[in-house]
Image 1 (cartoon, each protein chain N blue to C red):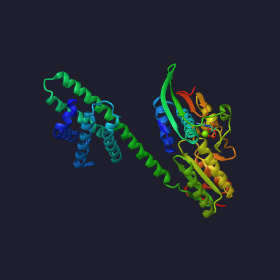
Image 2 (cartoon, each protein chain N blue to C red; image 1 turned 30 degrees about the horizontal axis):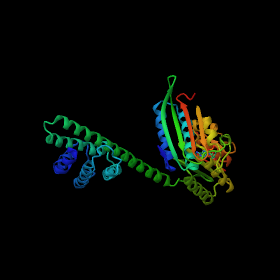
Image 3 (cartoon, protein in one colour; image 1 turned 90 degrees about the vertical axis):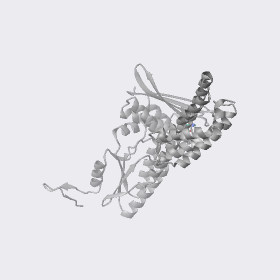
Image 4 (cartoon, each protein chain N blue to C red; image 1 turned 135 degrees about the vertical axis):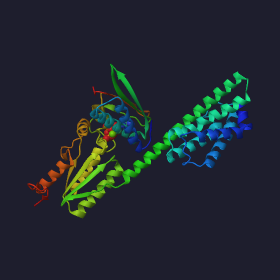
Length: 290
Length: 129
Ligand SMILES: Nc1ncnc2c1ncn2[C@@H]1O[C@H](COP(=O)(O)OP(=O)(O)O)[C@@H](O)[C@H]1O
Ligand SMILES: [Mg+2]
């Protein structure tokens, strides 16, 4: 059995204490986010697992069954920390600060036996490095889950349909227009057309990051549905780079009224409904007549 | 990067954006590459239930570019020529994904074996040519 495995068993208390104090003395650790008691318990479990795994003689393959309990604890800690808003440094330091605690214990135990000490320290280094990679991988996964959840939440915020003028609705679309979202957008638009008796709807896509053929198909579908309700649809906010991309993709928007900006779409809507907007010579009040 | 669900599309597109920004690609070229990427990754999800994507920065005669490789273990495509035609779709969609992606990027390669899967590789250079 290697010295480290033995030490993890016989000197567990000392190692745990110096590891804990290493962690707590690290400037970066936020003691507001995790209780000392919890940290103590997790660390204790991890040392137990590590002692057992290293006693099997396997000191480098962390994907073997004996390391499963350890990677499980580490993943658990990393995911929790990612969700709680810890920094990668704070999360990574958890495993890395164990290195020093074990090395100190080894140094005491193997005083004078330089070659043996060197071998053991190198082994511990390699092992803990691999384990810290696991920490980072799960940490990033945890963060990505947070991002996914947030993007789900954002897309759930229903798209507002705004009545901008008598007979004219505007619908600013922000974010990705996937199938589920299109359904929501279409339903609320059609409902609002009925409620307000509007005959023109402006779909503004300035906030849509990419228009691929699926998004285009959704837009075309929305326009057709609007027409079936007896209203006309104008798509605005097609940025120059998106216009070019649409052309290369081969999407035909020629039967759809499109405008570069919401303002020009509104102007078109006014003229379609024979609304005249003009500013009085000095004051900036607007008047309209039908 | 593994692609398994619809949300991965957004993550992946953001990553393509990061890489193309890193090499200083213009907005138009970025948008072209991202849109092509979006088409190919959606195909992978829709027809092959997901797959793997690799993003790399490559260089040729002092110009940098981004290479994307899409690999799936789906049903494959029996007739690639047909699939590359504008408007051909087995999925009730516009049928512009493959041919459109090819027009959007500088280099496009597709390999497929029925029953084994599909691999599409695209390259877009910093200056778009
Ligand atoms: N990764 C893939 N695996 C299997 N079949 C595919 C794959 N990608 C595309 N196809 C086939 O090629 C056809 C054309 O694809 P595409 O041009 O993107 O149009 P669309 O997705 O609108 O059908 C699809 O309908 C499908 O039959
Ligand atoms: Mg497609």
